[in-house]
Image (cartoon, rainbow, N blue to C red; front, side, top):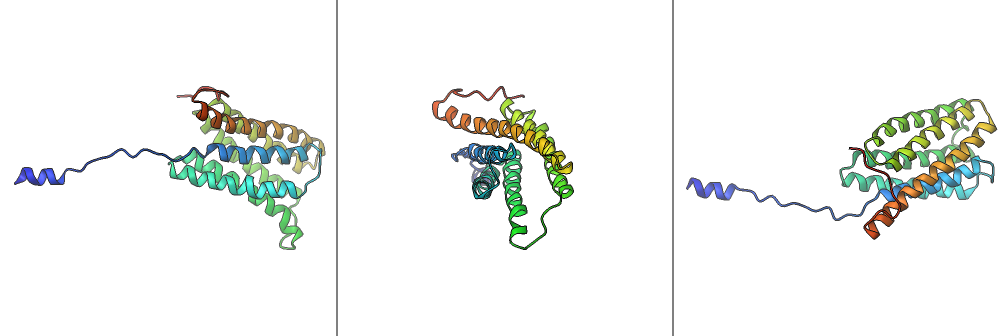
Length: 203
């Protein structure tokens, strides 16, 4: 009788294979392409128009939040935190630009804009520490993004067009690195080899 009970109580453990797609390329491309376009503006090549706002809201914002939720389903804390946070960054940035035009709030003064950009740089610097256990490409993305936020914070605090223009060029580099990292994951998965290398994963 005891043996029968033991057999009935035995649970069969089945391994569940994760068959969902990798959301990281979506998040990286949403961030990277929007960052490049915004920083071409910061570098002084064109004005701040609806192209940047549209990209910021939908691809930089909504797409990254979707990627963050997908990373949550994969139990990836780093990916969830990064993509959801930067998606909401883009939405808040669009809000900072649109709310004053809609009469909902006063436009940010240089000091408050500098504080906003500084805390995002601080967040990114801590996330950069996390990339030291990941691949070299992500280290470059988060490293250059930290510099970008702090350059923009300094440029706003000092109201210096020159520093903001310099940040624009650095931001184009940062966004380009994110685009490379996102596309490399797509092509490497399709071809089953390193078409675009990401650098060694640090153990």
